Image (cartoon, rainbow, N blue to C red; front, side):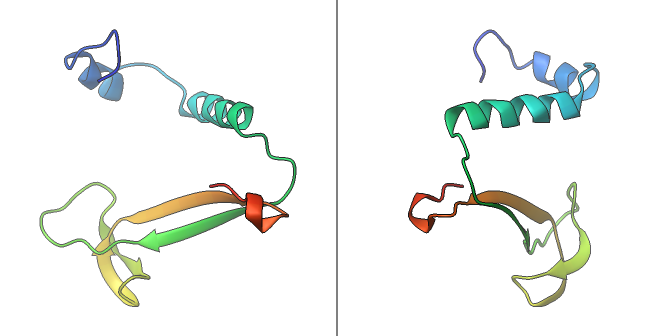
Length: 92
């Protein structure tokens, strides 16, 4: 729960509220950079398919699932990490 909110406000935020996802992403990145300044390195992306059985869920579809080694049903998870020039100082 977030301070100053209630359970009843979440459906409004998720379905009806007007907000710009790109602006939220930009604010998130700026906040992360303020906390952990990046001075050099590489941005590395990793995609992992997670197998899922059972009833349908958002983002679940037959697709390449690396953990299975073939086509499976499940969502994809995308990670982004900074690999610093000095491996001892790398931080996700």
